[in-house]
Image (cartoon, rainbow, N blue to C red; front, side, top):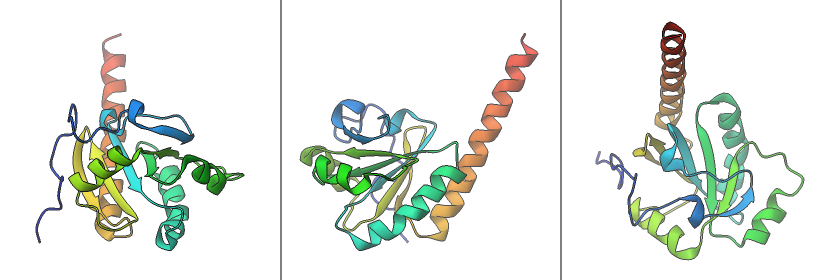
Length: 163
């Protein structure tokens, strides 16, 4: 099996694939740049897409379960349509509209041909790109969440030791 497009690439400072806050339009939550996080999921979805809508409860569960991993849901749907879609819903992740060119560049870089589609970024490097309802995706979330938890513990212990 071949490696999906973009996986293993470091996106920090990448000129073509920029999900910086400046390239996003806020819909729900506080915008962030997923490339700059220790670990982030970027989920590409559409309000019109039945499989995308069916995945939302699982995405909410992942957001609450894996607290060390930030989640950014992106779409090129009209921002007003996105706001209406989530109106009255307590969303534990960030929802962002991407302008057409940013959405297209991101989709092309990862060869996204269908949605829902997720990309896991670990320290700016794409670690996974594919469908979110796979065993591999779940395993990576657990692995990265545990790694970050351990990194936080080590940092805390080192800080206490240096006091």
